Length: 306
Picture 1 (tube, rainbow, N blue to C red):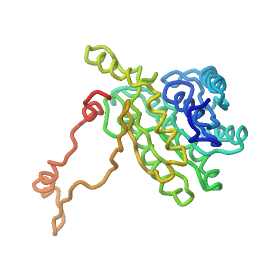
Picture 2: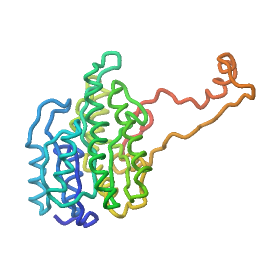
Picture 3: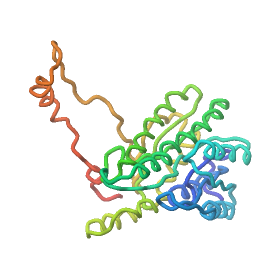
């Protein structure tokens, strides 16, 4: 499985690795010399059902190419099954060096019509799932004083999008989770970073394509293959990334962006303190030119991927 050896000797977990972006990450990590736990319960895009075949097919593909992999079918959305994913890595390969929290589902709906179940189920898989798997791995990483987390965020959370309050809340929560892990575990040489992918996958396949503009947008996204996301993940898992932690990278075709993180933009001060009236008369007008618009991801990334 000769590609490179940047991950030689490492044991890596990739969640949601049966299809799409996760599959490409698992294949590339194996090609770079890692032993890979291919985790996927084989659910539908909305989280329903289950099937062993997606994970098994990826393991078979890795083995055919001369790599080493095992399948795991646990859900990340509950603490005990998630901890068993970590146990699979240790039982199979004797150790764990990296975790890619890629597993996800979509349950899109405009906010006032979103069901409580749609909100909670997306939070469970994305945010709680990233926590559960990371938390189970953290004790191992602490003991060995090394390890790398790669979490998946989205411009739905970083910038904004219609009909995705559940997904956006989960994905921005993951940014906070990643930064906290980076801060808390830096002394143990444990790294934590986020990747925000632009790529065609099953989940993106749920985007509506009713108008000509929507069809054209989806056609452009379809050109952005999930294999374009894998290299940054393999890099972040490797020793070459030993100084990279607490960052957010967006990847779109052949572009890699370092994304900003919240910092003060401008301030207002009034020696005697503020009243609701002086905030209205002076405070807000002074700040208004720095307000963010109600932008969506497509407004910010408004040029074709290159």
